[in-house]
Amino acid sequence: QKEVEQNSGPLSVPEGAIASLNCTYSDRGSQSFFWYRQYSGKSPELIMFIYSNGDKEDGRFTAQLNKASQYVSLLIRDSQPSDSATYLCAVRGAQKLVFGQGTRLTINP
Amino acid sequence: GAGVSQSPRYKVTKRGQDVALRCDPISGHVSLYWYRQALGQGPEFLTYFNYEAQQDKSGLPNDRFSAERPEGSISTLTIQRTEQRDSAMYRCASSPQPDRGDLTGELFFGEGSRLTVL
Image 1 (cartoon, rainbow over the protein chains, first blue to last red):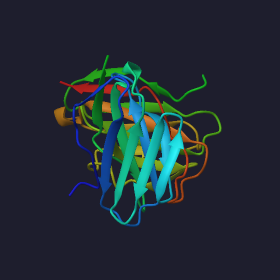
Image 2: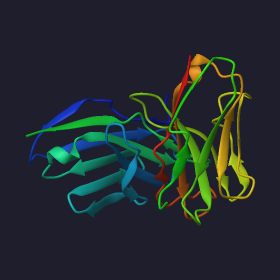
Image 3: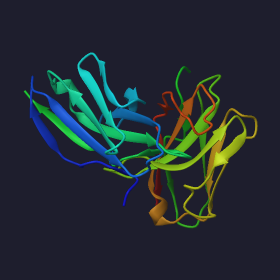
Image 4: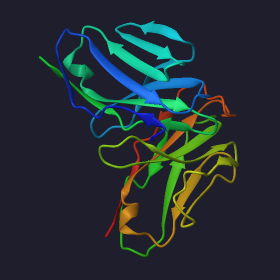
């Protein structure tokens, strides 16, 4: 079992709709959870982090964490074509920050 | 510069040669990480440093890979006797705070060094 799992996609969403990205992790002791965005040919950049169970909102982005289910998600409201990118879930385990394989998201105008 | 700087940006080498990849983190950043990213995959952890101390090297694939950060700033990832399977994008990242198992902040990534082994 991979430490951090994501659906690789591609996920296609119409402009203006809600995009939902999901991630599961295997280490129950994980404390910190991150979402990075990576445009094609570019380096990853942080969008959001979350440490506590529940929801955390930042503009059009909402991160959701459920430690009991070992599940993290990212919601993007009012999706824009500029949101088209690969979204990487990262989980801080005991020793290192582990990334999932990423979900490729395409927003269709 | 203001960001994480990596060199060379592109490196083509023949199988069996040694390569050294350099990372210059953001000034003042304490922790430094090396990741490897294959096309279509997420970054794969290799190793990380707090200051000059290597904290975790569990991700280094084998003993041909080594990393150092002797003065707590610039780091070098060295791959000896390169093999074709070593071809990938090697990414360095830094963070302003030490990572003692409780990373709570952002990693700032460089643009990467793309290694191709022929």
